[in-house]
Every structure is written in structure tokens, then in C-alpha cells.
Length: 529
Image 1 (cartoon, one colour):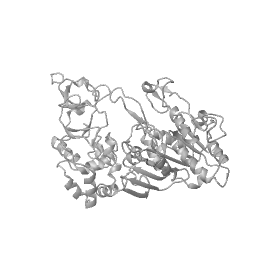
Image 2 (tube, rainbow, N blue to C red):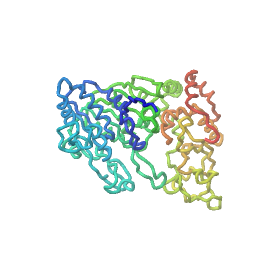
Image 3 (cartoon, rainbow, N blue to C red):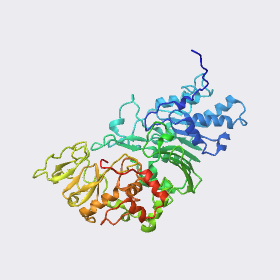
Image 4 (cartoon, rainbow, N blue to C red):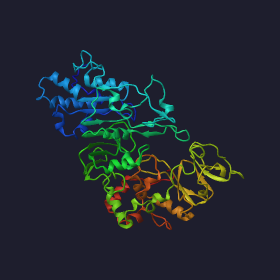
């Protein structure tokens, strides 16, 4: 067989398998796109300090080093002296696990021990160099970590296993290492995204976002610049564990100078699916103004706007710029309906866990009767994985709260649906003398203000099934969970009649392009949805 000459030598850091969907390796290409956002003069200064607070492969540190080695060539002509200065004075990292700290040192120093005889830098005495890691324990209180909310049951497992107690959000810098500077010019990285907090009553694998804690801690350190890549769910307040107050503050600060937002995570992380997409940003301490916002619908379509993140004062980032035209036309008839709950559809939708107390009537609860009896005479709509027919029967004393709502005509809708182009699960009529499990939300839930008829419920169902309705829900709903807040941009209608997309498009005078856009984004809701 003829020998073939192969010249391609791939970068090993572009070939690493990801740790998980929550601890994702960053490719050199992506790391460099983020570094390109920074003022490039930073890489020509001997004084600029950089910190990766969640280093995994060491790719950010390595690519920063490359730029500094080139940028400081005139100031420090001797290559070894230049490397020694950069590695000891300018570049710092915090490993998220012992394994990743070793990997990062190997990437940056060409040795897992920074003081090895063959390591690039010749001035380190400590094998850690400036990439620090020490095994930490969480601070437990009532089964949760005080700092990150991790589940004690899952993460209190001894020193032989990783605790995932990340030092950056658990300790002050001087407690992590006395060799860390107290001030950094640039904090950059790809932090872990979430930790499991558990849930004994319903979803035992329930996870809570923690990436905002890395952003928050970085801001408190007051660097000149922060650049991180995270899930985009925080923008629409549709993620577990991130306080809405934090989102309000971060959006209204107007310190995001550039944001690249990706509808699908595959563009940045091939083979990894992260609900709601991902984004990377440049935050600047001394900036306050409009943001260069790039919305990447896919690898080829990018929409740009230069404006404040919360353009319409809706409290969220409306990610797709094409949405503004539709919402503005609705607002011409309904005013700022999305700012007042009573004026939008969310006012009809119950809070989650409406009937359950996390013990009775959870998605997994089996204390119902399969047959109606003189005692168990209240119809109970439950998770269909428990009963193919979708219902059982319960007693009044088994309903922990909101008992009076059982008497209403109402609509039940699944609290979660993972289909991006269907958006919502199939709604159905809820007759009087019925309740539901944690699986569903209740529309028309409040006996003090709601008094729907069966006909009105059926007309509400017709409205929910329109593409128009579900598109407006998708503006805010970026994960499978669909709490009442995702209905913020849906206007109320006259429910004495049913609704079709044609009527709604005509009512709000949508253009052909706007109609085509909605039609392309949302599929019809079939009988099985």
C-alpha cells in the first residue's frame, strides 16, 4: 500500500470529549472569538492580569499566553524571560476539579507540574504554578450548601470523590491562595452551569443554575472586563435558581457592551444540547450604554441590533429582533399589556404546584383511587405514565390546598413541554369537581376572580392551539418548563368566541413576512401533543 503523507496536526484541545452538558470544554476557536472582544492593547501590556475562574482544559490561559508572548515581544525581547513574566505575573486559573487543573497545567506549562524541569516557565517553585486547585467541602445547612445550593445528599461524599465545591464562588481569593492577586483586569471563562439540588417530592434530579454566581462574584472583584460563555436562559428569566432580581439588575446595569447569543448550543458546542441556547458577552466596568447584540439563529443567519438589552422595558431580553415588530403591533391595540399581568394571559394561569404540597398530588404520587367511589369522588388528572387514561379519583382531604378551585370550569395544560416548535403541551377542559397533579397548570384557577363557562374554556383552548399564541409564549419560554410567566407576551382576547390564526393575523395586521416567520417557527398542535 502506498504511504500517504498526512500534514494535518489537530489541536488536542479541540478534540476533547465534554465532561457533561454542565461542564463543557471550550474549543480554541471559540476561546479566541471571546478574546477578540477584548481591547487588543491589553495583550501588549506587562501589567494586564487575567483570571480564568473555572478552568477545565486551560484553553483560555493558553490562548491568552500566545497573544501576550507576541504582544510583549518588544518590551521583553528574551523569549524565556517573557514567558517567565507572563506565566508568573499575568495569567492565573482556578481548576474546577483536580483532573482539570492537571489538564490546564499541561496545556499552559507543557507539564502537569509547573516546576517540572521541562515546564515552559523556569521560575515556579510550586507544582501548581498559577493554576490553583484544592479539594473543598460545601458548607451545609438544612441539606443544602449555603454558597451554591448543592444537595448534601448528593455531594457530601468524602474526600475520595469530587465535591464540585468550586472555589471561586465559595472562598475569597486570598483564602484560595495567597499567591493570587486581589485585582484582575480581565476575568474570562466558561463556568459550570448547574448543580443538582434534588427534590424528594417530585423531580429527584432537579438542578439549579450556578453560572450566575460566577458572573456575580466576578463583578464584585471589579475587573475592567468580564467575558464568559453561559446558557442564555437567564435572559428570559426561564431558569431554575437565578433570582429575577439578579436578572433585573444585570440587564438594567447596561454594562454589557457586546453579546453574541446563539439560539442553539450546537453552534458553539457541537454534539451538546443546552436548552435555550448559549451566549458569550463582554461586560465592561466603565461602560454604560447600548449593547452590540448579535442573535445567531443558526450558523448562517445572524441578526444584529444596537440597543439596550431590555429595549421594551419588559424585564427580559427579547432575543430574536424579529419579535419586536409583532409585539409592537399588539401593543398598538393593547398598550403595554406585557407590563401589567391583568392585561396579559399570565393572569389566567396558576402558579406551579397549584394543588400539591410536594407530598400529595405530585407527579409521582400514587395515593389516588383508580375507580370512583363514594369517598374518592373528585376526578384527579395525573401524569399519564401512571395511568394510560390520564386520571384517577381522590378524596377532598387528600387535596392539600386550593380546594375551592375544584368547582370551577377550567383548562389544564402540561407544566412542561420540551418541543421547541410545538412549545406547549396539549390543553384540555377541566370540568367542575376536578383537580390535577403537579404535572399540570390550571387556567382560570382563582375562584375569587375567575368564573369561566365551559364554552369559554373551549374557546381558550382554541386560542392556545394557534401558532400565534404559542409563538408569543416561545419569546420567553426557552426550556421545557412553562410557568405562568412565559405567557407574559400573550394578549387577552374575547373568549365568548373561538380563535384561529387567520383571525389573529388580521386583527393585529401582521405582514406577510411576519406571518411566514411565525408559520415557519411553530408547528400545528396535533391531537397527540
